[in-house]
Image 1: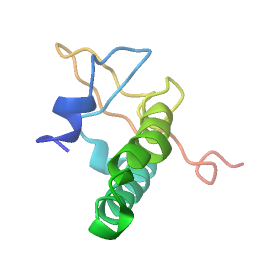
Image 2: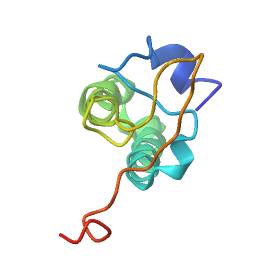
Image 3: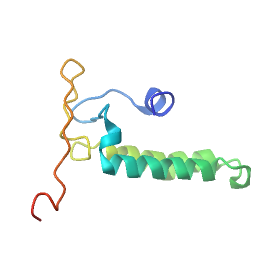
Length: 98
């Protein structure tokens, strides 16, 4: 995460494009990032062909980052100001009584 994904694809962190330094505490983020990793392993295998990494970007990375970094995504409740970082988990439907 901190050595490749964020430095290369992280872009600026804003309220419109949030990120949480404690991403590993957000179950949805962990699930999506794990799926990204599995897809990366499959699509960078020699048998995937030369277009594998491009397919990974188009079909996996771009949609996952859009979902993770949307204002109502898993990091939407976390403060994005580097001067005042704040980490807060959103309530799950079960905890909210839904």
